[in-house]
Length: 333
Image 1: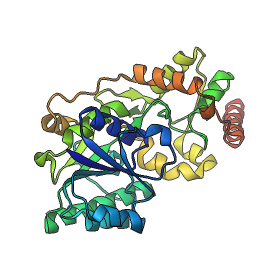
Image 2 (image 1 turned 90 degrees about the horizontal axis):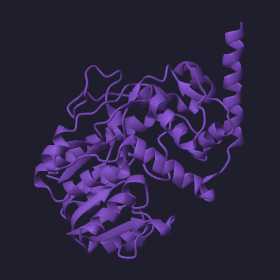
Image 3 (image 1 turned 180 degrees about the horizontal axis):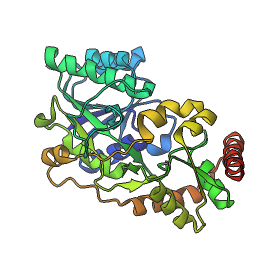
C-alpha cells in the first residue's frame, strides 16, 4: 500500500508513520523537516509545505492508495486537498476534531451523529467548516474522504494538560516540583478523555483503504475517562510530590488568560466521553491499550530525562502566582 502523510512529525502523525512502516507500507511524507529525528529513514520525504508549487508538481504524477492530512485547519486548505487529490487517491483521511460538538453536550457517550454547531472556539469553528467542504466534495464529486475525530491526544513529549505555558508541559511540572500550587479550572471533576498517540495510530492505520469508512466520520479515543483532578494527581504521583491544586472558576481563569477563553468554554470545561462503536466495527480488534497511568508515567519520565524539553516560562509562572494570590486573598476576605 502506497501512503502519503501530510505532516508526519506531530503527536499523532509520528506514530501513524511508524506503524504504517511496521506494517510494510510504502510511506511518503510532505514535511517541513523541523524534526528530522522523528522521520524514519524508510520514509520518502518531500521536504516543504503542501502549498509549495514544486511539491504539488511532484505529487501530480503520483497516485496513492491512501492520503492522510494532519494539518488541515482552514476550509481553504480542505478545498486545496480536494483539488489536489481528487482522482489521485483511493482513500483520503483527514484529522478533524471531537471538539466540534455542541456544548454543553446533551447526552453521553457522544456519538458521531451528535449535533455539531457553532463554538466560541475559533479552532472548532474552522474544523466544522473544513468538514463541510469535505462532505460537499463527497456528495457532489464522490471524493473518497473519511473524517477522523480524535479527542485530546498525547505522547511522550506532550502531556495532556488543561492549562500550560508557551514552553509546554514543563511549565506545569516545574511548579509541581517546586511545591507551588497548580491552577485547575472549575472543581476539577469534569470528566475528560485522553488517548495515547499509539492507540490513535492503531485506529487510523486500521482505516487505511477501508471502503466502508468512506463518507464516514469516526471517533478514535480510549474508553477510559478521568477527571481533570485525576489526571494531575497521576502526574504528581510520578513526580513523587504532593499535588497542590487551586481550583478557580473557568470565567475567572479566562480573565487572567483571555487567549484561552474559546478553548475552555468551547471544549476543556465540558465533560467529554466518546462512543467508539464505529471504529471498533470498522477496525475489528481495535482497542486502546495504553492506560492513562502508563501513558502519563512514560511522558513525565521522558520529559524529565530530556533537558531540551525543560524550558521555563517565567511569564506563565508569574501569572499563575497572581491568580493564586487573588484566590487566597478572596478566601481571607
